[in-house]
Length: 316
Image 1: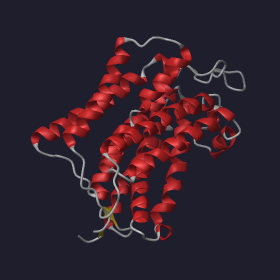
Image 2 (image 1 turned 45 degrees about the vertical axis):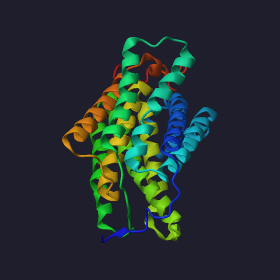
Image 3 (image 1 turned 90 degrees about the horizontal axis):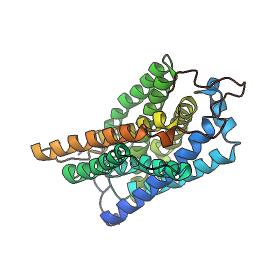
Image 4 (image 1 turned 180 degrees about the vertical axis):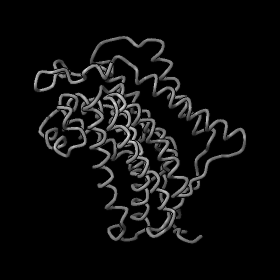
């Protein structure tokens, strides 16, 4: 088929499905821990730093934030390893479980018990991911060439991310945080597709340094990082992180199908399972996002450096 590399899937050594799942969940764990550390540091920063590159320059001097970035980077490495062995539609829903690990970390820190509502959220996220993978049976992704018109499918995603940023900047801190976080999630989904494409190019024995995808990965990653840290600066983790966690798998799945021609089971039973799984996953993320564990920044971080209340009543 034009624009695709017919050898992209040939000759690649594949890990077992269980190994891919284990690697991805380990990556999700590190991501969740990293997000908790990053938000605790970013929430101390003045609101004026939102979307300003200066925010990253200030955060890079904080050991806690650097530790969180280190954990996130290790999680992304494991995610990249999984993407080298499985389709984006398989890996990104599993990475969405990072919120479960973030919640568990916060629970350990604050020594509080899980309520029934949070247990329901955990079941919905885990069950939703499992239902999506079992019912949808993602498979058959290929490797579009760097010049394939299929890559144009990313343009609407980039426009959507920009639109979310523009919308959020004119709203309250709560809406701003959710919009910026959702925009970051959309870009992270695109980053997953770019990462898998670069890895397949490398495995094919081609010159990965001659492709634009390799250089786009860090660009998208930096912009996504700035959006995420700005969301963390604007509101507690319970408001900012769920939007990222929900947007990334949806973006990754859509772009994986549009760009890499990944396929899902679309008969009535399979489609119903896919839709139900995604709904359960997003609903569970929303429930977990309301956890009081994720709302607690470090002592004193609710105050701006000038002594005023950061939130000004915008964020509950």
